[in-house]
Image (cartoon, rainbow, N blue to C red; front, side):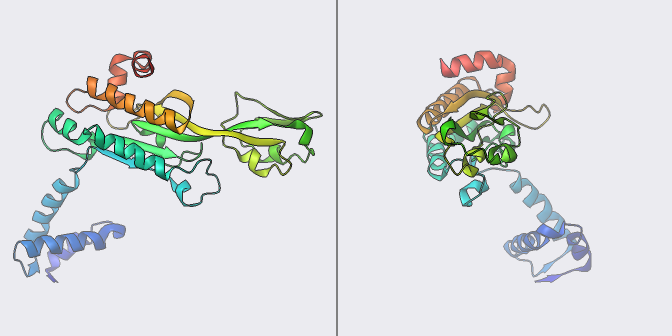
Length: 264
């Protein structure tokens, strides 16, 4: 499709990493209007139409994982099926219909109930700013009689939570983040993963009044995580006013009250 010079000049102002995609969208817009050339007028009209469309969301929720799903060496858990089950619960709760009734105007991305899962405490998927978040956890066990005093566990621990004494490894539970790195480097089984699960956070968000998600459960099995998630959604639907985020509800009612109502 032909582009007039003024339209091309506007296109060059688009960041290079999305320019090709924007060009394709503008040309599709022009064809729908029956235009053979992208003029300055068409470019400006497309910008307004696409901007409005881009701000709207089809669903009232988003569920995302992290790179741990594709063989990250730091991954503690493997949660692809859990993510599918979380999304299924959101659909069963009819969250999209619920939010469309609550908000004024079209459903937009900032209205979405955001769920994020990190397979390890590195939390690359920005779980701290999501409505509901899960962080993979490795609960450790010790068999100090197996220790060969190599010290690899001390070296690998970023939190300095491990000390190898004359009797074997000792873990400071206050410092330990349950990442399981020490167990991965322990060749003798002196440190091992006893149980895997998730730390659960709720109420994170950005926007005009940002706040970090707060811990509602330090450790939960997959089954417990799904049960709590369902209760969190029930709490959200009971108290949501005009499409406000879960974090805003918690700020209004207080975290102690929210936690008590959710967990019972």
